[in-house]
Image (cartoon, rainbow, N blue to C red; front, side, top):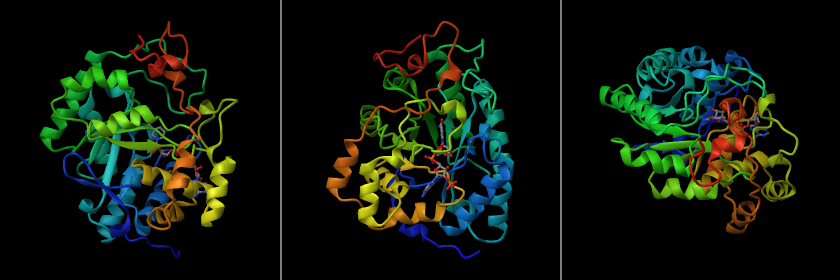
Length: 334
Ligand SMILES: NC(=O)c1ccc[n+]([C@@H]2O[C@H](COP(=O)([O-])OP(=O)(O)OC[C@H]3O[C@@H](n4cnc5c(N)ncnc54)[C@H](OP(=O)(O)O)[C@@H]3O)[C@@H](O)[C@H]2O)c1
């Protein structure tokens, strides 16, 4: 198949606090309980060949073996070297006490020798089964505990010492949780993966992360139109349908998705769009024809507090509702 190739050299980069360079756009690999592991792996294979070098994986996406076969084939065919890729993966909630085991399995499945960035996927060990529906609750779920989080994080620090991972990441964090844990970390987190799209910009958290030298990585950069049913509720806003986004797209002759990605990269977060069908244009759009300052300002005004991953499946007995997960009152909700 003929592909549009975007030279990885032309893709904008960020420098992490460690001095390591990371591409400013990556490919997401969560099939949203809709797309098979083989379909996602095929997109990764195509992504490598059209110039993606950053991949956002996770044990709980259930496709690391298939993606690993794609990485291995690309290495063997000489398409890329391992060191050309920046591979991120995550420890799932049921492995917080066995981080090394989880990480070794991911690295083995991905056939990547090491993880460039290893995220703690959620800041608590509350487990939900893959593909569960929105009403699913686990009676063993517990509120966030600083001590438990630090215990999980220290296991990640040990993995840096052993060379199995190069950087540690955190995900789905809040400012109160960050303030509680950051003073106790021996190795600073390099990045924090959070939901970021035009209708959910998390400006305060975004600024906090930048001030702390922690790179924001933005998940669901297009508002995840095909997200799992459990994350769809009446009242959610579709970013790509907003007239303002569509008008900017028309002015540039690009799709609304391209507008969301240009905005993300120009703002300074690293978007990790998932795509089976549009990944070539998604990479290409961030190397050409940037948005104007007026357009960036117009998108900044689209903030609507529209969190899509409410996380209700992680609630613990006694919790009020999903707002409790996000410490909206400014202190950690327990
Ligand atoms: N840390 C966490 O807790 C967490 C949570 C959620 C997600 N993530 C990560 O973030 C990644 C991205 O999130 P996501 O997949 O939920 O949402 P997303 O990237 O915002 O949206 C993906 C959807 O957008 C469509 N799309 C992509 N490019 C398009 C274009 N140019 N034009 C029109 N439609 C386009 C895709 O369709 P096609 O396939 O048809 O192109 C796909 O259905 C995930 O894959 C995962 O790696 C992390």
